Image 1: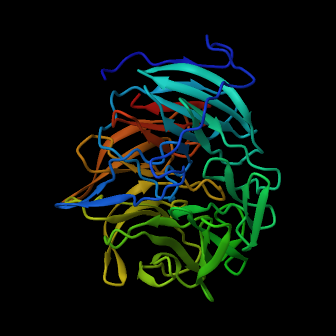
Image 2: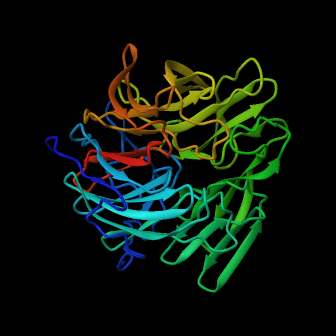
Length: 446
């Protein structure tokens, strides 16, 4: 698509009406019979690994892109054009989610005061915009495609305001409640498991009907970089295929898990998802660790020389020059961040290269969705998209034989105010979205 004039819309200036609600249609179904992400993120191919060509979680939009928590956009159609579509909001935009439509894509934007709007983007223009609901301030939205439109999945009253529900089958929800319980609701049937989940824990899909989340609240590592001083000492696996059952698969005595969710992704290349977490303690700070879903440790990365140093796990993708699987993380994003790429080598996650000058997280924020993998240049290999160190723009970092190079830059209006997300469209092209502190949402590629 050639560059074109992009639409800038505000609540007052727009020719589109801001309605109290939007029309919805019948709910669709995913290819595996339900909205949850039950397949692997990556498939093996000659010469390495490639991102799965299917439309990833096409019926459900998460702030962390995939139901598995692995922030990877499928497809290799690249981003068309240079100028973004821009959408002005009345408040401070804090969260974005998107789903593909035909044509274009649908987006939800939630502001700091909890107002949620929907806008549709097609052929470089915002074609529809309306208000769809409200959330408690700070609650991340989940969007579910109803026929040809995205709609807000409303949390239930007892849900934690720092987490979000996960749709299960057609009408069910799995969510963390305000007291740390994991709750499965399906119509009038409600089941609860006392797992002592983090207030901002996100259940992520491990397979069909199976989810992992962080539980066992503890304050023994008082770093407090992620919104509070409460971290996790357990990784819990939940099965919702026949009611709700849970079991602890990782139970830590010394270190804690410093994060809000595992990343469920294949780290070893055997086609089976692992659980990637960030372990932390006062002696060596944060380090990456990958476990099987049975709790066996597969590989561990290096730590630091002291505590209170964080490592932000983002995604697992075939970043390597020959399609090798690599884990992308940003170390010390609050004090001079470095994007680092790791490969599994035996029982270690070894750093293979890095690039300084990035910052994927704002100190004490609960928004950990500050980067993703996407093939923005259409060369068949994903780049790591992360904010610059001053958070005034985004960089697309490509792995090369010599290390890392910048393939593309995306300007923001002020500092990054939202998560970084995107969508793979039905024509295999990509759209990338983020919002700045100027109150404007920018969508590249539509």
